[in-house]
Length: 285
Ligand code: AMP
Image 1 (cartoon, rainbow, N blue to C red):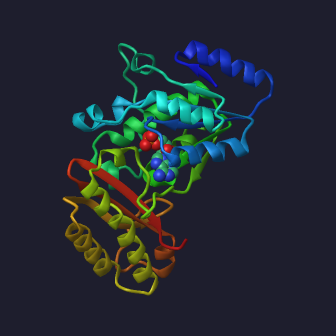
Image 2 (cartoon, rainbow, N blue to C red):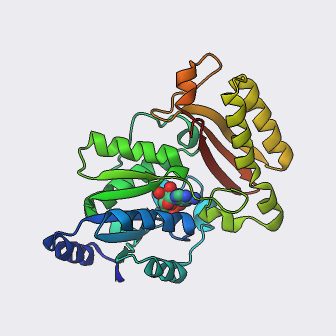
């Protein structure tokens, strides 16, 4: 497995692969890797001749300084896992390589930003779409793999690629879950034992909401019930618990048609102490 740290080294490596006609898949991460990340690598390995992973803790997507300062870092272990998973190369750029002195451009999607994490984490989504666009341009892969755990991010990246005519296929990979069905996340490492016991409530509540909505129960009542259960379980705060369209994140309310409800997803973000967890679940699948 090759490790490249600069754009120059990256360019050289990619040129050799392109010359050999290799199809390339990329998995972008912020490190602290878990089985969910490795699931993206597995999907990329199936579709492509070569797989490159990136590890970059992107300062532009952190709206909270403490979250950035306490973001877990375990690069040696990450590299070991990526090697074992059969990744061909890892790109580890430094912040100065991505955002040199005087950097001043933001890639911002005007749609689907004013809700969910876009509403509760100012600047976060612009930080994500900016860094992903830069990495897509630097790497020019045939396919890029993103987890549906970050569903809003996945939709926004699809929109960037469509709007800017970037020649890459964006592939969404379903959420990997721990035992107890808690969505895997690098931030789960920050949970203490008591919080770990509470965290799976997020999945259980979404699952029950899905069942109740499919049975025709009132969407508003079911979501109200869900909020109550999440807080009673021990979560400190809920940023959102909502039903939205899987296509464009339009809010699905009480009066929505059955068809709209069937094409929707439950989205949740809630805090356990200083750790914010997110998850989502499709109503129909
Ligand atoms: P992160 O390192 O958290 O920025 O995530 C890097 C990529 O891994 C993103 O495309 C995430 O959506 C994806 N990812 C993170 N957690 C999971 C998970 N539990 N299941 C599937 N994909 C995930």
